Image (cartoon, rainbow, N blue to C red; front, side, top):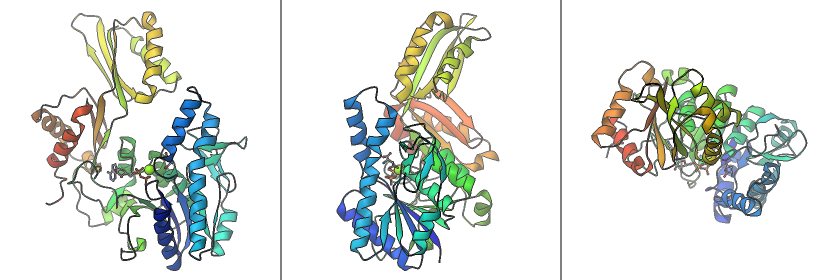
Length: 419
Ligand code: ADP
Ligand code: ASP
Ligand code: MG
C-alpha cells in the first residue's frame, strides 16, 4: 500500500462527464490498495472568466478581494468531485484551503505556502475516505482567502504530498507526460520518460507551463516524487503505478537509469516577455544602476539585459526584457526618470518571444549556443537579445517566428521523434 496524491488540471475537470472520468481514475487508485488525496483545479477557462469579472468591477482591484473571487473555481470542482465519488460508492469529502488549513503568507494573488497541517487529513485517509482538496487556495495569517498565482494547483498538490509524506504525487493533465517541447505546437515532440528536477525547473521557468515553476522547486526541496501523466485514459490504460508518464527525478536517479541522453532535453517558448530599449544612456558609473534600481524596488523582474556602446563615445544603448504584465508600469517609471537617467529615447516592443534550450548535458559540452545561433541565422531569424545559465541558452526573437524557431531548433538538436 502506498499513499498517493493525485492532481487533476482544468481541462481534466471541465464538465460532469470529465469529472466522472477523473472519479473513475481516483477510485481505481484506491481499489489498488492506496490511500489517496486528490487536488483539483477549476474547470478550464473558469479562472480566466473570474479574473475578467474582477477587472470589470475595478481595474485597480484589491488583490485580497480578487482572491475571494478566483478561489471559488476550485471550490466548485472539489465539491463536485466529492459528490461524484460518493455517487460511485466511495467515501469522500472536500477540504477547503482554510479547513485543512493550507497556511500561506499574505501576498494575495501570489501567496506562498508556509505550512500545511496534515493530521486531520491523514486520519480521514487512514479511515478509507478520499480527501478532495481545491488547489490554488490557502489562508493568510489574518484568516483571509489567498491564491498561489496562476497554475498554482500544481504547487498545492506537491505541498500536500510533502505534508502527508506521500509516496508519489501524480499530476494528471491533458498530455501524457513532459515532452521535448510543447506537443501541441511541434508534432514531432518526443515524450521524456525521465527529467531531472533541475531541468524541469529551468523548463518551467522559461515557459513550459506543464508544471508551475514553484511546484518543481518545492518538489526538489522536499524530495517529492512527481509523475506527469494523462487523465484522458480509459480502464485499459496502464496503471499509474507502472509509471506510464514522465517521472521527475534527481541527477543520481537519472544517471542510474539506462535512458539515452541527448545534449538538449527540451525547448520552451515564452510569449509573455516585452523588450524595452533606452537609447543614448550616459556611459558612466551609476547610469545603468539608475535604470534598474527603481524597477527592482517596484518588484519588476528584469530578465535579459544587453548594453551596446554607441558610436559616439560616452553613450550606450541599454535593452532589457520585463514580463508583459509589468510593461506599462516599467515604462511609466522610466518616463518619469528621463532627466535623472539622461537617456534620449524610450522604445518598447511586446511582440517578442523568448525561446530557450535546456539540458544538463550543456555543462560538459561546448557548442550548444553556436548551434542555436547558426540554426536561427540559416532561417533568417533575427536574435534581439541573448541570455544564458549553466544549463540553458535563451534568445529573444520576433513573436511571429516562434513556431518556426522552435521547430528548426528541435530538429537541429536531434530531438525529433522518428516518423
Ligand atoms: P492543467 O490544466 O492540467 O494544469 P496546463 O495547460 O497548465 O494543464 O499544462 C499542460 C499543457 O502544457 C499541455 O497541454 C501543453 O500544451 C503544455 N506544454 C508546454 N510545454 C510542454 C512540454 N514540454 N511537455 C508537455 N506539455 C507542455
Ligand atoms: N485555476 C488556477 C489557474 O487557472 C490554478 C490552476 O489551474 O493550477 O491558474
Ligand atoms: Mg497547469
